[in-house]
Length: 469
Image (cartoon, rainbow, N blue to C red; front, top):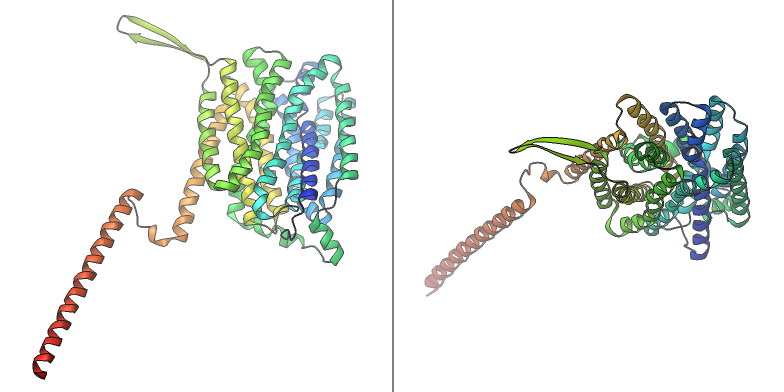
C-alpha cells in the first residue's frame, strides 16, 4: 500500500465513521452465540465443552479469513469488499433460525464468523485515508467498533425476554442488511484504490504482498495480539456463562456486566491509539502487558477458605472477591487489553506501510484465533479442573509469556543496534557514573599531556632564545 499523498479531513473522517459503525454491527453479529448460545444449550442440552466450541466457531472463520480479506481489500478496494462481506453475513443470520441440530448450528456459525473479518477490511480502508503520523489515532478510533460485541452482551438478553432466539436472529439479519446498504450508498472509494485505477497501475502480486510474513517480527506481533484481542473476544464470549454459573446471576445481569467490560475496552482503544502516537507503541505495550498480568492474577484467585494454626487455636478466614470487585478488575483489564490492541496495530503501518493488508491480516488472524481457541480451552479447563477462575489462570500464563518475550526481544534488538552494550552488565545509573569518571580521567590525562607538551615547547623556546642571545 502506498502512502497517503493528500489528507482530506472531511472525506477521511467520513470513511472512519462509516467503517467504525459497520465494524460495530459486524462484531455484534460475530459474538451472537455468546448470549443466544445459552438458550441453545438449554434447548439442545450439550455440555460446556460443546458450548465453548459453539461460541468459538464464528471466531474461527473470522480469524482465518482475515489475511485473505486484507489482501482482497488492497486489490479491489474497501468499499466493495466491505459491502459484499456484510451481505453474506446478513444471509447467514437469516439462515440461523432454520438450524435445528448442533452440526447445523456449527455450519451457520462458520458463515456468521465472516463478520469478524471486517476488522482487516477496515484497517486497510481506514489507513488508506490517513498519513502515518495520524494512523495510530485513526486506527484506535476505528477499533472502537469492538463495542459491537458489547451491544450483543447488553441488548441480546433484552431481545430474548420479548422474543425467541430465532426471531432475535432475524433482527440481527435485518440490521446487518441495512448497514450494508447504507455503507454502499454513503462510503467513497479510498484514494489509493481510486488513484491506482485512474492510472491503470497493476496491483502488486500475491508473492510480493506476503513477503513480509517471513519476518519473525510479524509473528511476534501476532502472538501479542493473540492475548490482547483474542483474550478480549474470548472473555466477551465466555463472561456471560461465567457470571451465570459462578455467581448465579440471571442472563440479563450477566450480559450487562459483560458489557461493562466490553464497552470501556472499545472506548479506551481510541485513547490507546492516541497514547501510542504520543508516547510510542513500545512503551504502551509494556504498560498493557504489565497491567494485564496484575489484573489476571487477581481474577485467577478462586474463592478460598483458609485455616491457620494460631497461638490460641485455629484462625479461619476466607478470600472471596465479590461480583462488583471482580467487575472492577475486569474493567481495568479491558483498558489494558484495548491499549495493547492499539499499540500492536500502531506498529504495522509504521514498519510495513506497503503491506498493511497482508501483515495486518495475519496479525488479526492469529489474534482472532485466540478468540477461537481460548473459549474451547476455558470449557475444557472447567470440565477437567473444575475451577471457575481457570480461564483467568490461562490468560495470566499467556500474559507472562508475552511480557517476557517482548522484553528479551527488545534487549536483543538493542544489542544488535548498539554492539557496545553487549558487555555491559551493570545498572544504567552505575554505568553512567563510571562513564563520567572515565571521561574525567581521560580529560585529566589529556590536560596533563597538554601541560607537558606546553612545558616542553617553552623549554625549547627558552633554549632557542639563549642560543640567539
